[in-house]
Image (cartoon, rainbow, N blue to C red; front, side, top):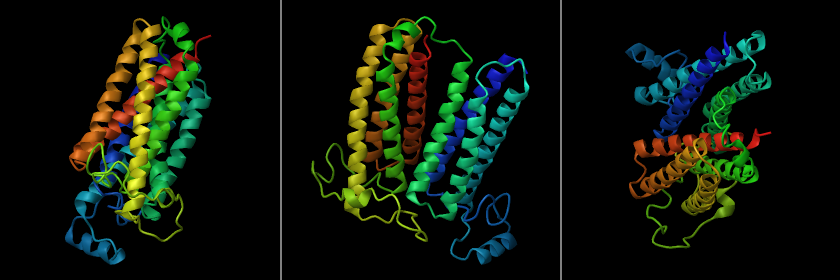
Length: 331
């Protein structure tokens, strides 16, 4: 395979990873995370049991989880896409290791991606077998974002998009890295909010229950491990703990918005051409993400907007990965 062919396959894998992230959000937010109570199949099938005798057998085998075909199909479509992505990433690694014509990226990145995908598959299994344990669900979300980011980094390494701006952007390397870390922390908070069903702990904005300082239990809200055998579907926390999680996510959003706004201005001020286009992309995605977050609260978490909130977070992360890579790789 040529370098150009490898680039196209890498780009396809990145787009497929974005689709998997969106499907994962759609599955989670559609309360279909336990649509199939087993793994990797669904009630012992490779698809969803829908014939009358299949449903009867499935419900006899899993009496605590009646078959809901709509939810089960959401889960299985997500698994099909994730499995396909895993095979494409495996192909990327094997091609890179065997081909002498491909020089970018280095061999370590495809190998690391395969290892990440294997761990991500384990997290997907544990999400089901550990009954939506929040720390596992959050880890699965972050694993998906990490896979997407590394695939995008692989794409970026094969294209010289910032030759003109790299020397100027290099001066922003510490600021870019800090922005990336803050954004990842905020995405983690978003995953913790979602996995603990705390997105609607506050249903008004900018106050919460009409107060600036509502009752909140931060100690209870951020307990990462609560033992095994607990079914976390629809959450187990009381309202003050969920409020604490929700408020922390709001505060994090404000911090990230202010910092990335400052960083966007810095990128714009030192760049021309592609650097300014990247600043526009980051600024636009940032405003859109904040808007979607507010709409999630005031419109009581409509599924389409909630999934879009996850999708824009992924795109904003890719924009920050692009900026950090451009600032870091300059020699």
